[in-house]
Length: 239
Length: 225
Image 1 (spheres, chains in turn cyan, yellow):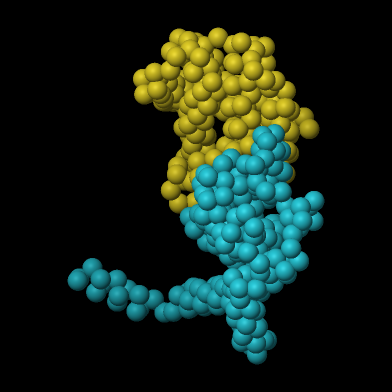
Image 2 (cartoon, each protein chain N blue to C red):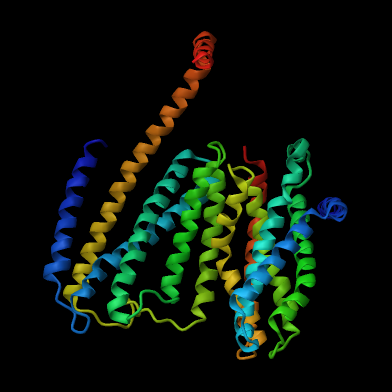
């Protein structure tokens, strides 16, 4: 297992640099938008990656509610954290592209609003995790994740009722896209997914270690003889 | 089922009696939303035409903030003398407690709305150009949406540090579709420019989804260690 991590890291680095080349050099320049359009190779893959991470978060939360496994809880925590980062990338790159192309930074369109609401929900999820006392955190967080997932279709329908201004999906939709552009997009998505998986993995290991350390320290505090504790408290009050 | 109903009724009666004698929640909500009405009114100073368009947003923002005031007090009473712990040990179904709290909050916020609506009409010169009979429906569905989630999240934030701040942080993001629906439906009815039907259906769907979800998950939250 320990061998796999550096190999994956090297692979991801290679893939990311190849994807960078594909996006900035190899992919043709868009006719009307020009080079601004290249942000698309970062915007869209980040969005897909963030949504996948939020999906994983939801399933891990449900798994936690059913089986109460701490592994599922760590997965939920990790995917939410990394998902928020990718979602932030989406929300930052979107307006940078929209300003020259649409002439406005922001509009309350379906996909924009949905992404923003998802981001808000997951930020509140992370705040909840931060603020609840450790024993109850996994349960409360899992419950909130379920609420968030239930909220998504409702947000979707509520905003769908307004006319949508966002460019229609270019993959799987009716829109046409240059095959070289599609290639660059998919390579970028692959690279970003690998990167996300890598970050999640190392964060997962970190969190597991962190919890082990906390448990050990709690145990040690229980097993420790009382005298050193009283000594420190005495010296504390004296100083 | 009958134990659920009778326990709900008992808890609700207790909460209403307590509120009737202390008037803590209703007074703070009333004064708070009065302040919001006054401040909005003179900071915007809208004409009748404008105010019809923005009133939906103003009204619901005022009620939302006022509801948070009441929701924060919901569970505080049960923490004193470990009432909540006693409830957890007892064989009573958790949902009876939850339903009683939701219905209680629903009544408080509805009373608040009944008292505040005349003030809104006076300050903003409001007159509905659309079908006015839909307004109570929107108010009831919207209030239920706020209160059912609010009560649930208030119970969740009991288990956190600085719980008074946690409640809006949890409640507002999840309530965005409901808020949008309330504001748009109210605006549609007041201006009469388009139909509020879609928004009413959406609000009803929101209420059903989150009432069921809360009833399913409240046991977990109450029993959280």
